[in-house]
Amino acid sequence: MIQPQNNLQRVLGLKDAVGVGLGAIIGAGIFVVTGVAAGVAGPAFLIGLMIAGAVASFNGLSSAQLAAVYPQSGGTYEYGYRLLNPAMGFSAGWMFLLSKLSAAGIVAIGFGSYFHQLVPAFSPMVYSVAAIVLLTIANLLGIKKAGTVNVAIVLITLLSLVYFVFSGLGSVERGNFTPFTPFGTLGIAEASAILFFAFTGYARIATLAEEVVEPEKTIPRAVIITILTAIVLYAAVSFVAVGVIGAGGMAESRSPLQMAAGKMTTPSIVLVVTLGAATAMLGVLLSQILGISRMLLAMGRRNDLPAFFEKIHPSTSVPHLGILFTSGVILAITLLGSFEFVVRSATFTILLYYSITNLAAMKQPLTEQLYSRAIPWLGLAGCLAMSVSLPWEVIVSGVILLVVGFGVRWVVKQI
Image (cartoon, rainbow, N blue to C red; front, top):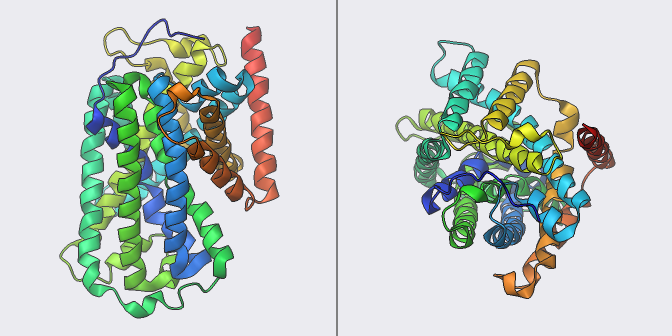
C-alpha cells in the first residue's frame, strides 16, 4: 500500500468541496447537452434526465464511500490499485487524464465564445487563452485560493440559472410537452445515456480527497449535496426550456438556453444566461486543472508516469509541475483544436472509469461500507446498460487509447 511521502494540505471544507463538485458538473451539460437529449427523446428527455441522475447517484455514493476510507489524490486510480489490481487502477487514471485534458480544451474554447458575446473587444481565442493563464495562476497560489475563486464562479452560474427558471415559468406552454414521447422508450434510453455524462463531475471531489478536511464525513456529504443540487437544477431548467421553446427548438439550437431566454421578457435575461454560460465553462475549466494535476500527482507517486509529477511546492503545497503541465497541454489543445479521436472515446472512458469505481466499492470490507451493498451493483448495472448504446467505433477507439497508455507506462517503468 503506497503512502505519500509529501502530503497536500487538508484545507477544503464542505462548502469548498460542494463548490468543486458543482463547478465540474454545471457546464456544457446544462447549456448544450440538454438540447442534444431533447433531439433524441423529445420532451420525454426529462425522464431520461431522472434516470441519468439516479445512475449518477449510485456511482457518486460508491465514489464517496471509497474516498471516505482512502482519502488520497487520484480517486478511482487509487481505489483500483488498492482493491482490484494495478491494471485496473492504471486504466482508470489514464482514461481520466485523456478525457479531461481533451474536454478542458473544448471548455476553454466554449468560454471564449460565450465571453466574446459579452465583451466583443477581443477575439474568442484571446479570452480562452487568458482564462487558462489566469486559472493556472489561481491554482499555483494554493488550493484554498483556487477553491475560493471556484465558489465565486459557481455562485454566479447558479444565480443565473435560478434567474432563468423564475423568468421562464410564466412563459411555459403546455402544448410544448405534447407529444411527450415521440421516439418511445428507446429515445428515453438514449437520452439518459447522453445526459449521464452531464452529471459526472462529482468525482472531482474524490480526486481531491487528500485536500479535504475530515474526508470521512465531508466527502459523502459533499457528493450527496452536489448530485441532488444538480438533479433539481437540471430538471427545473430543462422543464422551463422545453415549456418555452419546445423540444424541437432545443434540438435545433447549439445554445438552447440562450434561445429560450430570447423568448422571455424579464430584464437582461439573455445577458444573464450568457454570463452564466461563460462562468459555467470557467468553473469546469478550473476543476479540470485541479483534478488532472492531482491525478498526475497520484500516478507519479506510483511511477506510472514520470516521478517529477509528485513534487509539491514547499510554500503553496500544490503539485506545481502537474499544474503547469496540465495547463500547457490544455493551452496546446485550445490553440490547435481538440483531438477528435480522443473526444469520440469520451463515453467509453467515463463508463470504464465508473465501472472500475463500482467494482472497487464491491470489494470493500463490510466494515468500510457506508451504504447498502446494492449501491455499487446498481451503479455498475447502469454503466453496463448505457454502454450497450455505444457505437462500436467508440469502443474500439477507447481500447486503442488504453493500449497506448499501457505502452507509455511500460516506457516510464524502464527509465
